[in-house]
Image (tube, rainbow, N blue to C red; front, top):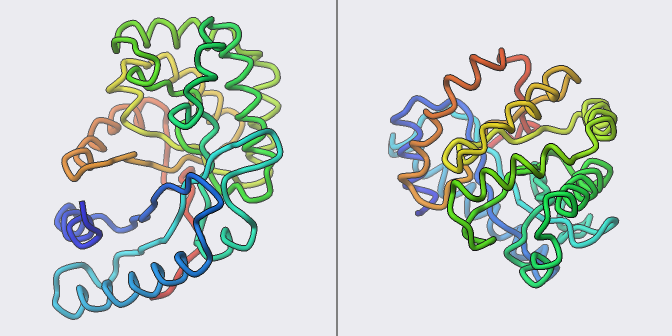
Length: 246
């Protein structure tokens, strides 16, 4: 999945805004690397526009997805964060913390951990938006989609919703976006609609994220059309990064 292929595909779909985001799993991600990538992207996009392969009016953003390492630390320094248009923070990247999963096997213990990390992400100064909060990937837990969905439902019932509501109020005050991804439908974790409804109630903005790791997954965004209507999400309720002029 190349940047060129993504941009050409989304131009064909009539997309007006797109954010190019990759993972930052450690502090090894250097400022030089971020700066070089940004310069290369600028050149590639200019070339594609001149060739007529992508829309000249499409807004393109350059972001990074970091993760909570512990309560006060994310996997990116303030200096590196400044190289991007926005920083997504993932509170639940269990793929790099797999040994800890085994101590989080009950819904109640995982609920505490999920809320704790979500609060940490909301309070961290580097956070612009939060990636896939409370969404649990079945493969990392060694469960089927149905088993994970049931476990996730029980986990959300154990979350302290008063604390969650207060945290969402802070997110709204800070202008932090919450990702709405088709993966929650793919994973049958539709009970998360209660969480998204609370986001709406507290005035938190959403960003629509494909969480795609392949070109085919970009098409999964269509799965969100009904959900967006159900939640009553309007253009004014969408979170956008700061403008970056190419």
